[in-house]
Image (cartoon, rainbow, N blue to C red):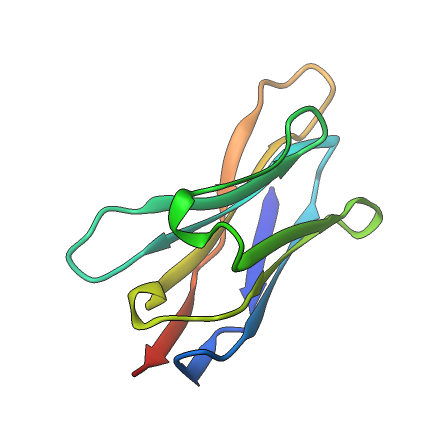
Length: 121
């Protein structure tokens, strides 16, 4: 099994910063991509940022220039540095890991439990 654990959420004022961390562990042959999603109350889950070996880092338009995704391949970790936060960034943030457990396995998506980010105005 693959475990995904996020940390780093919290309550900050608008204009502030937060850094989210995500660690994947367990039976992992290879991680293809690591991503951050978020889901605000009453809204669908949306992709915020992703990073992969082949396509690099990608961001949804609303966070470009404010958020930075980075990855520590040796430790199977991914980070999301969030700056210039606005109330619209308030959501539960989820880490997604796309990985193979064994060399012959297909890729599967693994999710963390989510971490709450709340931005006060």
